[in-house]
Image (cartoon, rainbow, N blue to C red; front, side):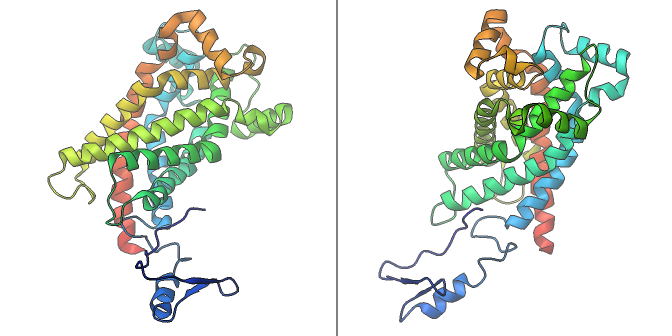
Length: 332
C-alpha cells in the first residue's frame, strides 16, 4: 500500500529492469543490489529511520483503543453541543445526560468509536511512518515541513479508510438519543439502517470536511509534536522520550490542532447529523447556516469539551504509541 525507502544507487549505476524476474541487474552491482531487495516484502523489516509496518499497525491499534475508552465522555458532550441549542454548556449537558440516562449515557455511541478508533490509529501511525520514509532526506532526517506533509498524508488516509464512516455512525447514535422516539438499537443496527435507507453514501456524509479536518489535524499534530520533542528533549529527539516529554508534547500538539480546525469539525458534525441531507445542500451551505444562526461563535460550539478531550487524547495516544512501539521493536 505504501512505498518504503530503498537504497539509492551511486550516480554511475544505470540498471536495466528485467520485468520477468522483477530484479535489477548490472555487471558490477547485481549481487549487492539483489541482496538489498531480497527482503522488501517482509513486513517486519523497517526502512531506514522508521518503524516496521507491523509495529506501526499494532502499536497504533493498542494505543488508539486505550485512549478512546479514557476520553470518550468529552467527545459525547462536544458532539451534543454542536448538534443544537438544547444545552446551555458542557456541564449542563453532563448533568442532563446523567439525570436522564445515568452515567452510561455519556458513553452512548462509544461502540462505533471504539470499533473505529483501533483501525483509525493503526492506519494513522502506519501512514505517518510510511509517508515519513518517502519524505525523509538521505540521512534519515525530517524537517518541520516534511513532518507536516507526512501528517497531512496520514490524516487524509485515515479519513478515507476509517474516520468518515465511523464518525457518521457515532454522530447519528448520539443525535438519535435526543429524539422523542430513538430509532437505533446499537452500532450494528444503526449501520444497517443507514445503509439500507441511504446506501453506502449514507455513511460517507460529510466526507469533504472530514478529509479537511483529519488532514489538518494530523498535519498540525505531528508537526507540533515533533517540534516540541526537539525543544524539550535533552538527548536525541528521535529516540524514545521520557513519558513527561511525550505527554507535554502531545498535549500542546492536540490543543493547537483544536484551535486550528474547530470550525471544520462543527460543519462536519452538522453534516453527519440526522436529517442533514434534507437541511443542507453541501458543506458550504451548512457553514452558511451555522453563521446565520450564531455568527462566528457557532463554529466554536463544543470547543471547550473538544479541547479537553483532544489535549488528553493526543497526549495519551502519542505517549502510548512511542512506549508500546519501543517494546514491540524488541520482540519483532
